[in-house]
Image (tube, rainbow, N blue to C red):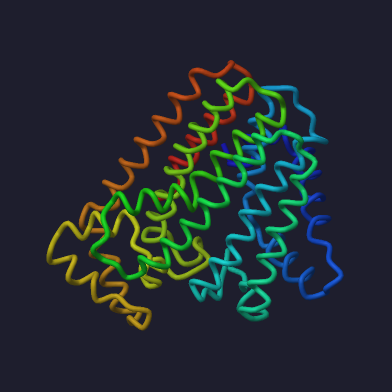
Length: 320
């Protein structure tokens, strides 16, 4: 089943959220509006809004309330991508020009800040202090993850714990909070929204590990950027950490820099793929998915639970 078919029953509500996103980035500044719209229309999967809506299905579902939460989470994710592209000096995002390449770094940074501000404004209609505290904590952790990634660029001696903490902060917590905040906005009991948070966390960890695997195994066309881009930019991911357990391969990988030639990178990527690191990373991703499925067992047996399970399975089956 295609990914979007799994939650097709949410299509009407997702279209409403799309309108909320477009309304949120309206600005007096033509540059801010055009730059924000450029990224919003560049083909994002809207995974976080989907998780928000599914979390809300466990409670008193009101799209006119939950839409604000869904748009908020997507805007925060979008803003973080703008800043990511500046830090990584990336020219492509999902196969399209990034804001920093289409305009410049200054426009990109202010656009990211503008989108963050709009996200907070959108969330203001939610009265729950707990929801705002969770969102604030998530944003703090997201920023810490970004700083850690900058600090650890080309640090080939970092350990697995640093990597897992980084992807928790950069990816997993935002997905976990999407599930939980959707539920809280619908008045769900604490026991249920805590389980949804844990489910989202485990799915988020698996999702990022899979992305890190695909950076080596997918084609440039599929990725919308050159294969091995993370490594070229100095981001040390799980397949690389596993591959570097071989001292000879570690010495080879440590030669990677931004100016490493395409032929050299092809050789290094092939060496990582031949080392068994991809398969081991995939097994770790599957372990996180199993934990996610365990959390679902304690939730009410409604359509949303089945959909969450289907989405998690789809994440585990993405092409390696």
